[in-house]
Amino acid sequence: MAGTVAAPFSPGAPGAGDPYFPLAGNGGYDTTHYRLQVAYDPPTDYLKGVATITAIATQNLSALISTLKV
Image (cartoon, rainbow, N blue to C red; front, side):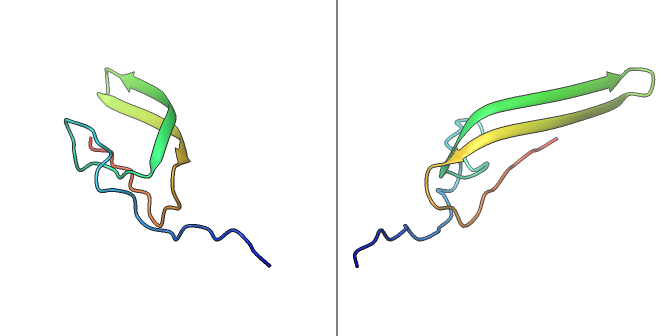
């Protein structure tokens, strides 16, 4: 019986190809949408935020690296 064999899982390429941060993140997926919710309270100098990212894998990934530097 012939069947389809899935590609092995492996990490994506090092870096996502950003010219400013060439080694941030990894390849192997495409981000399709970003949603940022940010709130700032000047009297307390408090900044709060949530980032929601929608992405689709372009290969069988063994790892996904999300880099956020504040």
